[in-house]
Image (cartoon, protein in one colour):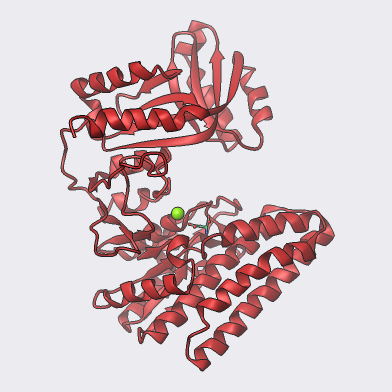
Length: 447
Ligand code: ASP
Ligand code: MG
């Protein structure tokens, strides 16, 4: 069971989680947690502030969050409470030291940043362990850095699967045999020489599926604050409804293309063993949520869900037809890999390719490198809207979809025959209206 930050936002939320764990105690459980909501952001911001020489201001901004942690344990029995007060104080002291260090050096490198960010998950996992104990559930905090072994790419470290599998089993199986619930922080790991790493923002889901795969789990449950994967972003479409089932391919595609409850890498570890993944609501645990599994029923519907991703830049590269036909795409991919940048191709033609990528860091040097391949044009503040579902592959369905899209006339529409999605690129400002219009056409017509 993995609980996200919004399922651990305050004392009541921790109680809800304890009740959910308690009602599933008969099964062999492992619990993975995110940091309390807002804590990772606050830690990263604080770290950056310290990097500008403002260590004490940075600490000021974090005090509120230490208070929130203290509040969670305020009604525990005296012994547990005292133990946890020491734990929180220890973490605070380590953070003060880190802040002082970056403030003095004025360097915000990613290694101490990972050390800083790791405190959120380490604390919430320790807190939940004590809350579970108070509920009479035998539970034991496990340092995830002993289980998830990664390379040293700080900020987006990649796990070594064999080591992770071996370590996770060695750490967790004895506890499971003793009927004790291991509680671990997601998001964090350690390099082979024991230095703290993180797996990328929002990656606690990924930690959960990695650990599930290592243990050969029967099921993974991702507990969040919505009912599951929705037919569209509920912030944009009030009538969005829960998707009851998804295949692994559909889920992976939705995750990649921006569905907010799914982390982009979380499906990969469970596919081989066909471990089912359930997305559930910690505020309404009786609801059935979304089930991602190998037996997902095929629907006649064209699309299971619409995902959207904003804050993208559109890049068009044109070159000679000869080059485009031979080696062009490979050369482009190499450049993106070299810059650690993900891309989403949106359209290809005889003389060029258009794609979208995240509007982040080293874009200008990326563009410079791309210019060696042809002429390059860029357009920022773009978004991609993706209709995802196995049904997209049928000619009938994609015809219907293209019909809806032609009313909207997005800048570009692209369908990859081998994949399960139809992707359109629009200006960022149009995302809301376009998603609503597509949703209406696909899910609400005739209702
Ligand atoms: N707490 C981490 C983050 O905010 C990881 C997660 O929530 O999954 O990115
Ligand atoms: Mg998340």
